[in-house]
Image 1: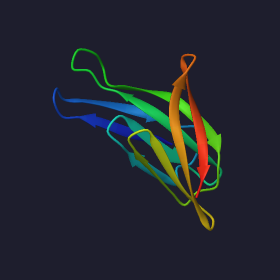
Image 2: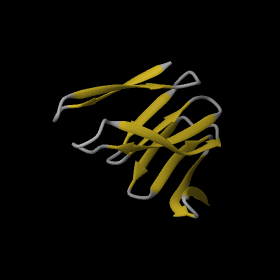
Image 3: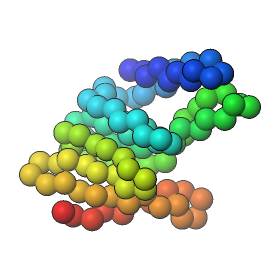
Image 4: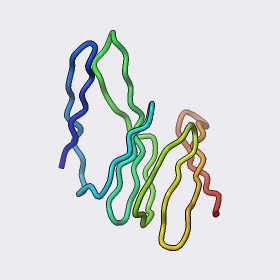
Length: 102
């Protein structure tokens, strides 16, 4: 499975290769969330007019979700009978996901 990323100015497209069947995608300002039936993966979108468009995995975790949204540093996961809010924080050169149960 793959996703096609397109930048309009300057014009460029990149193919994102994924190792799982995609159930949903959410594109935020600087992040992309992709999920299937058992896992959520968060990518950082690296967009500079002086270098090629690319993505890098920030985090991946097991979770059964029907929808995911990203707002600022928060990741909202619609799980069976609840909404979990996870906070994305950088620590020791990698991203950590902390969960707040709502």
